[in-house]
Length: 309
Image (cartoon, rainbow, N blue to C red):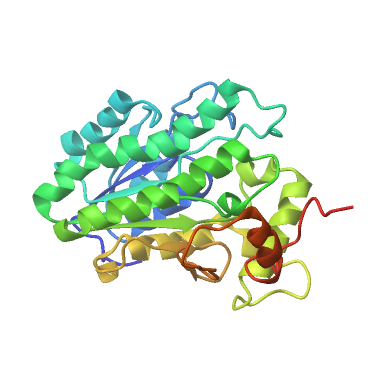
């Protein structure tokens, strides 16, 4: 495909399946040496197997690239350190980190257990910290780095995914904070909202899928919409890979602290949070004043979920 990443070394967490696999393959095809990290767990994070990581490593080698497998978990700090050590020991450096690794424990909040909450945050959000914290010293030394964290549109609100949404939107705040710290060192940090037909998305309830369609219609007016269901190839997880690889390349220098939608055939830039309306007075508010003013100012386009009888 190219040589844009010749001489670069990349870690791809969750690289044995789905979107992570496609990203690992695309990075390798453009010249990067890859650490394919995957514990080989089931969708809920249980179990382990080296097979998924090994298969991707073999694919990369068969195509003439260089890759090694890592089976350590991103969810624990010391384990994440071993993943980074695998890159240093085999290739002598680390230039790129992609963190798609994730699990699902979908449950309505009134049924969710503490363990289901903790497990999802541990892999997604703690995993992001564990990996970034361990790669950053190596990148700072070289004054170069590319970090792409895989968030999700579910962070905008998805029924039955309070744990997943919290972890993924937390990753956006993490991205924006860390990007400011690392930009002076030549390290670009961005988040993506990926998409595609994977074992993870195939397990999502239809109600959540319908909600996401509604959200896209409400928040992505500038994105071309299909008049009917898109063709199957639109949902190919490989569609995310070239956009992610771009963010991992030297061409993306100066692009940092951003959130990109990479699902399908479009590439979307999401706006940061900003104030859309404000009310002000030169002394403290009373509840009576707020009751009168908010419905015709801040709340004029909002639907009250509990309207007065």
